[in-house]
Amino acid sequence: MEEYVLICEDSIDGILTGIYEAYAYKKAHNIDSHDRIHIYAGEPGTYRLFTTYEHIETQQDKVSKVSDTLQRELGQEVYYFLCLAMSSYCEDKADAVYHTVVSGLKHHDKNVFARLAEDAVSRAFSYARGANNELLHLKGFLRFQELENGILYAKIAPKNHILNFLMPHFADRFPAEDFVIFDERRMLFALHAKHKQWYNYSLAEGVFDEANLVFSEEEQAYQELFRHFVDKIAIEERNNLSLQQNNLPLRFRPYMCEFGKSVVIK
Image (cartoon, rainbow, N blue to C red; front, side, top):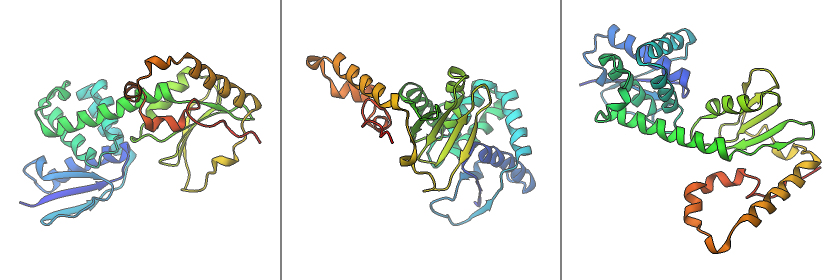
């Protein structure tokens, strides 16, 4: 039996557009089941026989319609976790979210993530939980460094595309600060001007050179003091590397000043 694949942009807006188009596609082509329709965020790695592929463009009016429907029918909490799942790095996230939405709307179930016996729901829940865990880690592990001009700068490289979930946390904590968080994996900046709304700014690969940043004179001194503090409070007899790595995974440490080298003052 022929199947249909809609290829959308790898973003929350792209996937929401894909969900809108999937429902419209099913109705327009009189397809008997949503099980025959799939959504891919980005080009699929392989193409299958007896499958129709179509590319769709992100459209904000369709994004708004789907977003409003999901929040109204499934509730804010479910919508938030669906967005977390859509921010996952996993390749089949779009399809998992789409069929979770189908299940939730079909049963008018605001507790759709309790339906873990369904494969799509189980996968979407797993992806949302993974993105949320990384988000919680970064809320504690992210380190700002002060630039010469007073702007606070931080660098991250999360597996999941969670910068948009991370920024509201720090915008709420530091409303009177100018700060920037740089996602080097995606070459994406999130910028916050004091007492203003934050926004994203994307750069092409290789355009930004961190070596050109000029840090304040106080920054190196404070980093040295912090590293000295971390070293002195350690109890050698109670050193437990396995527990440390469980609580603070190695992949976060290159971006934390207590584990890295001092910044270079120019």
